[in-house]
Image 1 (tube, one colour):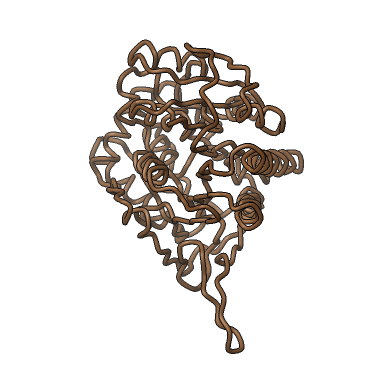
Image 2: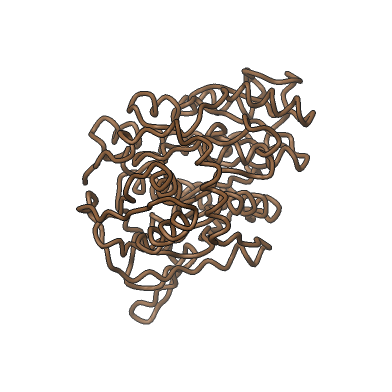
Length: 394
């Protein structure tokens, strides 16, 4: 089985590449180092230095004898995208330079992933819109033109839904109106331009499904936390990219770094904002089981990819409790909320579909958090307090 991963250098992309490679898949990854370059441009912190994507693929091969082909390039270039399906692709690194063949499955991570980045200023807003929509559109047309049976697994986000005052279904909603009923995509009300582009991605793919019978699974993912996976333990250099800043760091990862650095936890407003979360290991499970149980021809299948819900203040209090038990003097700081969002709201999403496929959740426990404290603690000297909070407002 040939698996193509778009955005293979990222926080989720690289662990996904190793995870599938370890299970016998032929894996090709594509990336243009957007996130790494943005970290340099915005001067935000990564917890530790990482080898290049090509170096990591070589390290993986040295340890396992398994090849991850690498392509360095910008997927907003339609011709690059199409080359991945036609055999004209030029690999940046591969043990066997021979074209692997049209991918049976494509995992689409290749997007600017940050809400604060998308609203930093008009320039970064434009970059977000152009990158995210062009990559998705290029992928959709490449699949249409060369391989309509390819299964696309697209990473959406629970942020597409916003925080409606009704239960959030898994992607779809039956509507009764004036004696008739129909099934529609669940209403979207994004809270950032990044999340708005994700809504547009879903609409693009839904168009491709309706018009050309494409096969698409859209995973509405909540914020992910974690550092290590089973594969990354093979060699410390195989760990994934880890941000702790406001721009690219996810909240649990940020809180643990703040606790280790003796920086008061940055809770926006009252901290009542509630979201769904999952361990990075569960992201890998979800993508694998989605691949093994693909959407049907002409189907847009949507799963809400979360395992449990927490409010921000619940996460902060848990971080403080675990941190203090480990000897850290963790404090909580309630900041004026820089975001336009409801701090107290109803939030009840459905998220049973992936567990029905066989996903076994890793819940956020004290032990899980303690393990993350230990890993972050080893890199404490690398933490820059000046990049933790930038106060991007919208």
